[in-house]
Amino acid sequence: MPTPMLNTVNSPKDLRKLPQEDLSRLAAELRKFIIDIVATKEGHLGASLGVVELTIVLHYVFNTPDDLLVWDVGHQAYGHKILTGRRDQFHTNRQLGGISGFPKRSESIYDTFGTGHSSTAISAALGMAIASNLEGKKEKQHIAVVGDASIASGMAFEGLNHAGVTDANLLVILNDNAIGIDPSVGALKQYLTKARVGYKPKQDNIIEALNFRYFGPVDGHDIPGLIKILRKLQKINGPKFLHVVTTKGKGLKKAEEDQVKYHAPGKFKPETGELLPKATENLPLKYQDVFGLSLVELAEKNEKIIGITPAMPTGSSLKYMMQAFPDRAFDVGIAEQHAVTLAAGMATRGFRVFCAIYSTFLQRAYDQVIHDVAIQNLPVIFCLDRAGLVGEDGATHHGVFDIAYLRSIPNLIIAAPANEIDLRNLLYTAQLALDSPLVIRYPRGRGQLTDWQQPFEALEIGRGRCLKEGSEIAVLSIGNMTRNSKLAIEKIEAEHKDKIGHFDMLFVKPLDETLLHRICKKYTSIITVEDGVAKGGFGSAVLEFASKNDYRLKIRCLGVPDEFIEHGSVDELQEKCGINVENIREVIFSQL
Image (cartoon, rainbow, N blue to C red):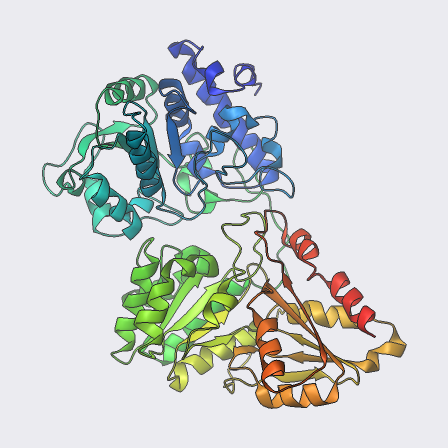
């Protein structure tokens, strides 16, 4: 489908020149443009398709960028990017050197606030609105667009609670499509389910109780209706709330029918939405599926096992536990702090609680890890999916900080399996007789083994292993970097291989000090390799050990450098960070 009208819109100023009756045609072109690009380049699809009309109307009615528009999370911001001068760059979305998949302040003046994690938009927009009041700009508009899954988060309520006692010129727009990545959950969801276009339940309106003027629900695909209500709200000062009902995946039948799968579907046929087949035969499972299926195996024999995830049952594969044992597996919504303390409460009663959470999302519950779990030494098992570099989602989603931010916490055990069998055995060990909290970090994507479903074996906490002995250089790897290190050593010329030892440490904390003493006494240099920040990470722990014990051998630490890593494929980013196979080989060779 040609997009002649869209091609004339290089900024919201161009959009505002169009007659209102042409906006439906523009919406069709914009929707088709998003579908065509995402079909071949991949990315987040359903959320942006659902807000095409809302996006157009927001830029049509409000004087952006002077009026400030904040998109929560940013999954829904593709149309916004295209209408704000990035149409011709949109095909580079989420690719190395291309535009970000999320709003990013350094990318455009229309991206007023960087978002990647959920539920931050209300607080940010309120901060902007209060700042405008202080500058005497009380007519300036501040709009936060928030999804129905994100608004149930504690941080969103903190923002609403504060806004309700201010005179800030804040408009919160609830994009209600009944789903985040997975279907929304919780009591607020039950209220929203009762609401529909033209009907607002008279009771239980928590938003009005927080001193917001509440409008809607309105049809989020009705352009004239949206223009009418937003122009009305422009003239009303103070905190306002507009409830907009949309359909995630609108305009692509298959995306409307399977909203979970088409949140980020991969490549598909743009005409039909049919997913393009991927060659998965004889390929290893994803680590998340090994976790999910192994947990079900363990839960079948141990009725004390419980699973918890904050809004990621599909992404973490806790969905298998939820299907098999619905009374013992919980999706608590976008509420990471609650998830951790809920797990702590259950652990006090003798349950083995597996909290499945992305590494980057656990950052949002750091206080709870310390205050509610570690201080009380409760045996909560944190299963950190997406640890390390995750690829195209970029800086907000890379799980590269967890080793550094967790390593300093007393009582915490930190492990990183080298493969799927290690992951299974760590899960098995954790539910036996653990008396301290345990973190198991594993990467995004497929594992290495097709025969991963081996009998469970208990592991000794804090015990590493020698994969290969050498005489000069000891390579100490952790987690998925064990494979990269092994391949790098295999690439070293035959006459040098006997000089290189390789050790999979498995545990970052406690370190295997017995093994480290042997290594430091035998080898002349050490190279540590990790898929996490080098400063404060696994390599730093080895340096601390060497310093404490007065070992004076040369130690080189490979890891993610001291900068925020942008988006690109995992292979591209590992090369950029110097933890790909070839760079590890070069560093080893340079030390010989």
